[in-house]
Length: 359
Image (cartoon, rainbow, N blue to C red; front, side, top):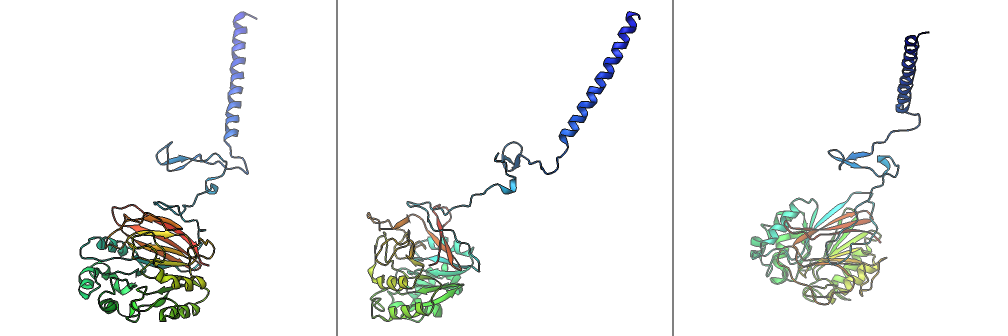
């Protein structure tokens, strides 16, 4: 065989061999890309981060996107204290909303207009924690100072009387303005239902309209009212706080209120009077920390009149304090549980929120 023939034969064999190799590679590639029964291909990106517009790399834990763990937001408190530590509730029924504050309207201050603006966007019952119209609770002050601001919500307001409201004839203008919603004058204590919750409103102008201690008509009524509503969740609202780090400090006139409410298993107390925001840990009527059966107190005298600094000595069990922010307190009252949220006026940033379960 000539050299040319041998070379031609080798070229043909090489060409055929390379053809077999190419076909084998194509087959292997197809096999590698074919889905295998029982396995799924998981994308390594989900919307929201780098990599391509709107994507974020997933964790490399091996879980599919739908099984990756999520972290629930915990209660926050932009404050001098720590967030609430109560277990987060799981409401299973209708939620009643209460929203409000104390120490509200003065014609000399523009801030009650700002807090009223907050309430515009919140459905539910509006509460007041006293001192609704400054300086003397007169009919003129209710008409000119309170009515143009918080008065727009009068049809859904359940008020509490404060010491400034009672300056004029033991609160005559207060009772005339709010009518039956304020309870019978000049007493001013009453109760109502908000969803599954019992709401008690008291008059802590003691010993003005009535003494608040043992033997008083108001305490007898309170004990009877609590006995008639056993076993449920209870919140009480009045003006002067039993515990406070604010300008006025602790007001011992309401000690008997605390004793009756604690004995009945009440859950929450809301006050005003001191022009600040302060939240206390659950405690006993004597001020001992009691995370199991104690009552949580929240002072929210931030309705618009003015703000005042705290005392140098902070009260025991005070968890959160702020004296620079106007705002309102929203309470979401569910069967067996509650949440709270302090909402600042536009332009201010302090907030506080948390949750609790009923006793």
